[in-house]
Length: 339
Image (cartoon, rainbow, N blue to C red; front, side):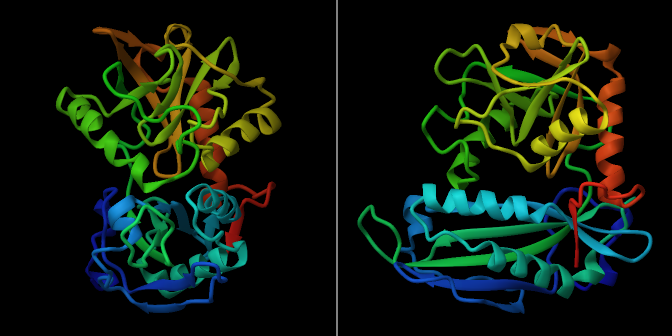
């Protein structure tokens, strides 16, 4: 689709085909080779590919913004590069070099710059995927790996922007166990969440909240976002036990809360019972940025937070983060990488 055919004023968080993508390859036991920008198109892959048969693959998500002064920037892509490399190691794939990862992201954004909406309309979502593309039958690492980076203009992840969302705690499904792959963006982590998420949406909720798999007592994540509770002025989020994704936005929120706003932060286990006593709750992630949670349904009872409105600290954190991302305030932490 040509960029001038897209209605940038009415974007949703959905896929829109753009001009091009980046593709690089690596043989098992070899080094990643620099790739190329190619026209966006379908991939040709063997039915015996490791990603299709055994789910050997991961993805990342970043956002590029077009500031009012014309600059094009990406939010903290080096953090995604670090996480992708760790994920490759966990999934028995060759570690993607940071310089290759960043170069690929920059080149794709630059080549599709005319698809980037302004900050009032949305952003350009950058999706790197790394997967086993070689053919094989046994349960073993693939013989070949592929990196693809593509982009899509997107609007808000949750409808209504900063409007509070309704969530429901699930006791029927778990996201990830300890010592599993919950701490990396493995592709296999996400399809199991489609059913509970779909069931929640049929009941009028935006997403589910997952509890820990061992005791079903402690909050882990909100679908594909990290969970935060504000209790007595403290910003609390579940500690990284290995089953929780170390979100880039999660880290950024904690840093802003402590360094910019002077708030106490705690990374620790938080029980669902404690969370329900919070003054404010919200979730955060690349797609959602910061989404206030207006209510949580737990065991059939609705618990309301901030009288169903956006909490004060949640709003301050959202404003502080988006001011950096949107270029309306100085990037004092050097989080934005200019293209």
